Amino acid sequence: MRDDNLKHSHLNNWSSLSLKLGVAISLILVIIGLILIGTTGAKGVEPIVPLNQLPQEILALNAIAIITTGILILLLTPILQVVIAIVTFSRDRDKLYLGISLTLLCILASSLLLALM
Amino acid sequence: MTEVSLWALGGIGLVAGLLGSALGVGGGAFIVPMLTLALNLPIHIAIGSSLVAIVATSCTATSVYTKNRLTNLKLGLLLETAATPGAIIGGFIVVLLASSVLNALFGVVLIYVAYTMAVSQPAIAEDSRHKGNSAKPDNTSTNLSNRLAGSYYDQSMSKVVTYKVSHIPQGLGSGFLAGTLSSLLGIGGGIVQVPILNLVMGLPMKAAIATSSFMIAITATVGALIHYYHGNVYPIIVAPLVIGVFLGARAGTELAQRTRGILLKRIFAGFLFITAILMFLKAANII
Image 1 (cartoon, rainbow over the protein chains, first blue to last red):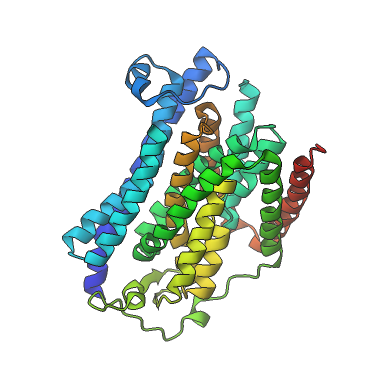
Image 2 (spheres, each protein chain N blue to C red):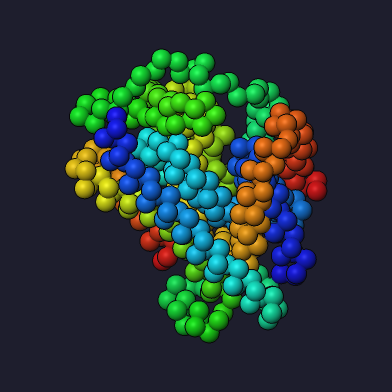
């Protein structure tokens, strides 16, 4: 029991830390975007900035682009949990859960690719 | 989008986060009807927005649960292999359904949530359910149930609680249903998951809530990405909602400790019932 807990304590610790970081970074970007909207005035309900235009729009301090980036980072955070699980189970040579996690990552990746199309 | 609307969105998020963390009910049951009834947003956009907010709250909650070793990560990952396809399917069905159908479906879900909250009893002490359960995770066993057994230190009882997991096919089935409903209606799915995890699969309530929270984060992410693809996620709507939900969730934990949970649940159940009626009226184009 103690060995199992120690083995999975890394998974729990990394999972907790990555969740906190992901949410924090996402919230910071969203707040920056809202502040920019507050100072420049809301221009109506605009949809998400296309992915290929995000970098230049962020540099141009486009509030919607910054908020969009924050949203995407938030949505990537749970996916990162699965990646952490894959790394942990791979290191522990737990083939069953490595397979389960890889299957889950494939499903998540397909929905992410669809969203970014 | 006016300044008033941004503050209104933040307020809706704040209350949703407050209620969600204080009552253990996902914010979607509050966010979606408020966005459609109070702000007159199209329900498809309300659902997409709600799912992003749910990702924020569930990630925040899961970070705490995971650190405290309450989450059964292996079980959550396994059940998510059924929940995520359900979420993808729900996300594609939702665009085929008219707003009136979704409004009516949501009304039905609200009736169910209101009922479960109205009849809920104080949590049974973990000890009474899991006395003498000396489950020991055995990673060398080919028995999946044995490998999913878990344990955590319960601070309120000052002891380690151990448990076994059973009825995995039922868990996978409920996971699929929860995933489908999540993307279809913009809810987390915990209202389906938690009872199954606790009453059918054998997890103590704290582990059930923690594991469900972990699963909701992933399921809602898939739903949110599908809605993003459909163009139902508007940053200027999501941003104040997410901020409000995050702040509300932090305050909700304080509220939960200072108020009588049962009274709060009864009041919220009444509110949900009224909201369900309004959703039915909206579905019938009466309001």
